[in-house]
Image (cartoon, rainbow, N blue to C red):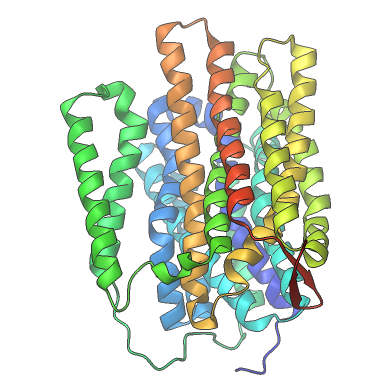
Length: 466
């Protein structure tokens, strides 16, 4: 229905869909100690349960975006809600590692179906100033949900128990389905017959899974062990095959023509790197509980500043973008994120001073993410052809999920390596693990400076800034 205009009911339904992934699925980090004690499973299995959702989402999200373009974005979004419900129920009833892992995998698939579909719906049904507004609320659910997840998770675990992290997702998903139900379908209507790129799907999944195993298990197996070297060879071979074949494919999984835009490149690269900063929370929350003596609820309270900051500045980032273009709020955002995380690396400080640094640092990081979120999302999906919106948003959100997954994996690997050499070096291990996120934020800033053009937007027109 080309004349259909998106409304607040549809927008709120999509926001709930995004929240089922970034808020509810992400809140498991706060419940790690409780899950470990309740199920009696090893820390490595729990680490896998934390990171596998983002990994599965990342390796399938581009495919899901393409499917949404072809079969219908509303339909695929509803499938994502159903998967979220199934995955949450499996996690909620789990009595061991099997159902927990399977449920987390399904939660990852639900995120892959929901996120590119909702972004493409916004691109199709919201125009003019309504689009940046819709993207701001979408970003609020995404970035804000990730910020709220630790406080929310700590509160739920303390008051109700860890299983309620998953049970609460079910009614939220049902309400989201109801709000989106009845919306006219949105799909690629170009009339061109397109086949699914099965070879692309297989090679990208193999390559990324191999790389993730190298990062997460390399220290345990030995960096020069036969397993790691074989996985490295598999990663390189699969990735090279993927690039070669995709460039010749008439209907590729990844449309490389999207990367002709420097702005799109900047959005994807910086988005990947800033989501790597999620690794800081994976290190920080267990550290302040096990080493600094806080409860799960108290550790969640430290993130209040981040939550307030990101909620209050996302619309500010949108307004700045409308006046100056995307470059300046993205620069401010990446710079503040790196500065905020740096404050959290000061693990040599006493408890009171360090907790103050965490609170302030998370608040600064939240302001940075708030400024960055909408301009980055708009740069990635706001200017692509509508028939490619699902693929473009799928690649962009693949960067989000993979960044989060590899951020957790790399930060955890660095921290674990220090602890293996000295069990008493917990402060140093946490500081260096957090330092990974500082480096990621700094490189993200460099990418924005190098690639985002100096453009000023004013009432839909563009002109260069001197």
